[in-house]
Amino acid sequence: MKAKYYIADVFAEEKNGGNQLAVVFPKHELSDEEMQAIALEFHFSETTFVTGMKDDAYAVRIFTPAVEVPFAGHPTLGTAAVIAREYGLDSQTPIKLSLKAGVIPVTMSAGDGVLWMKQNQPDFGARYDIKTIAEKFGMYMNDFHPAYPPAVVSTGIPFLMIPLGGADALRHSQAVFSTGSGRVTKDMENPFYCFLPPEHPYGGTAAARLFAPQFGIAEDPATGSAAGCMGAYLTHYGPDKTIDIKILQGAEVNRPSVLYVKTTKTGEKFEVLVGGKVVFFSEGHVLS
Image (cartoon, rainbow, N blue to C red; front, side, top):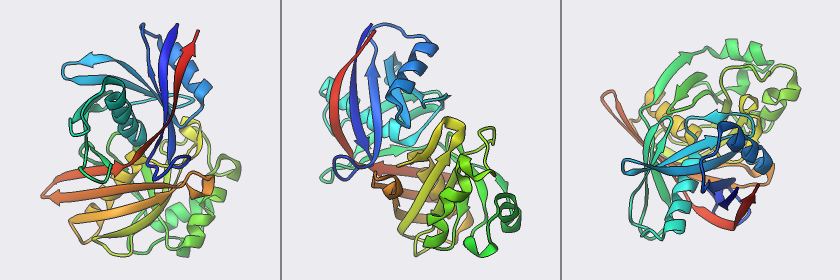
């Protein structure tokens, strides 16, 4: 087997930032086991496989080092950018990816090089009181943001959204939500998205960290799927129904990342847009 691959930095403002992604173009059909083994070899947060066309969309499968996932943000954005490069597509041509979670369109805004994906309608799961989460994970009540509840949100992958009240709490979140803390196990249902909400209900700059032992990811440098969940969360639980935010993530793992989120809620419907830049790093071939 010989398959071309690209490595790209997604949600990166410059090279060696953002979340690394390998995108593989198999010449022949691969088994699930073969794709999982390749993803483990790359050992990035995710590796994608462009397996052909499905109607007018590119069929793509996404693997973490441990499992296949139906959707993830940086693989969606990064794979679209790589497809455009591989097939010489015009930067203004919308690209549709057919994922297990559904068809996701990706477009590029003119001038600034930001790619945007439109995420699925959010699903709002369990909501918890602060005391319950604080006691479960050995945190203090004042670690949490008082205006927002811990809650599960999904636009393809469910995350436990944990709004924190200050930079110290975010800094110490690794000690709480890493597998070495003694309070987190790989069989827990949802990854943990710890974040500082933006300074204004309608927007500004937020900061986040993502811990996903369930997927074999100790800490993710940039999490587009969770960023979309944050946008939906803020318009659902906050006072403003339109927000425009920038999320900083990844500095703690030396992969500084910037994610842009625009969300509008109209009645019970949401438009969730997540954007970022993609920097190409290398290309080569996977050998059998």
